[in-house]
Length: 99
Image (tube, rainbow, N blue to C red):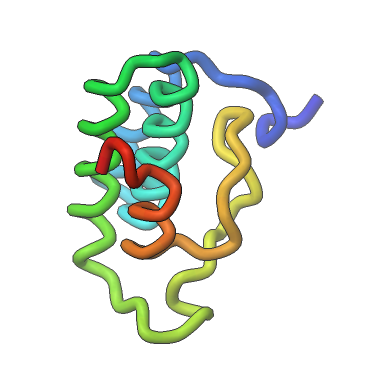
């Protein structure tokens, strides 16, 4: 089983997010999306909402005019499949009820 397909715990994802925030903000946005998804799927709407907001804040710092600029760099994070493109519209579309 590869690291990409292993299901990471929320704690592991949060640790990864903190590290990525300092070293790779795009990866941090992808991990925040995964955390929002995991919390939403677990029924923790408040935590999901916080991770959606964090993801959107990070994405504000990136250009997103072209598909290349919005393309995700990983297929999944901690067992959560990522969309092919990550931008505000995708995040709000996936998390409209909590965004």
